[in-house]
Amino acid sequence: MEELVDPRLEARGVRLLLKRDDLIDPEIPGNKWRKLKYNLEAARRSGQGGILTFGGAYSNHIRATAAAGARFGLRTIGVIRGEEHLPLNPTLSYAVEQGMILAYLDRQTYRRKTESDVTEDLRRRFGDFYLIPEGGSNGLAVRGCAEIPDEITRDFDLVCCPCGTGGTLAGIAAGLRGEREAIGFSVLKGARWLDDEIRRLQEDAYATTRGRWRVNLDYHFGGYAKTRPELLSFIEDFERRHGLRLDRLYTGKMMYGIFDLADKHTFPTGTTIVAIITGPI
Image (cartoon, rainbow, N blue to C red; front, side, top):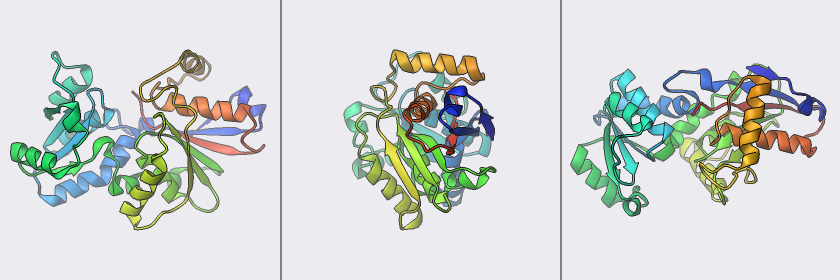
């Protein structure tokens, strides 16, 4: 836990604490480890011979799964969206170095990756496997992320996180106590479906919904992997002020949103916010 002292927040009566989950592990950082933690245990118990998961060519989930498989002795298969491009980019090169087998699905088939004919074809190609969804979000991932609030050692009112697939927010909300609330800052454009997905993930984990949470849809900056000059300027200025480099895909968008909402007097005076630094890019 680190306190971030910034006169812009002080002027609005807001205290900001950072939970540095990016420091959990250099190869399996932040919410990647939390999502994989119980899935790794389940994969090992299943006796299915390894893990298969999905992601794009620059997926941090693919990279972290490959690293986890190498460390804990599990075979890993990464199914990548689109065609193979050689030479491999740094993300996929690292995954191969960790022993991951790569397979590719054209974009049309990839959109159907959860359908039975696609998964059965993958089983014919690679044998049996424990399936982890794209981004790692499922009921076990929610249980891993639900451990975050109990690790926050200072009093707080609100916890914020970036939101892609919804798993981290679903877990944090489930782990909150009392009247505290969680806000997820969506990095995807038009992601109104996240509300239903978070409910589904919590029900998968606990057979019910838990906690207070909401998704903010206003700081995606054009959508996933999209940026705008004001976001990049904010990230550069934040690093100069505080010595912490935010990534432009996730934590940069969340932090921009926190500062902008504070400037608009959205948070009552005296609010203490915890921002989860979910991992580096």
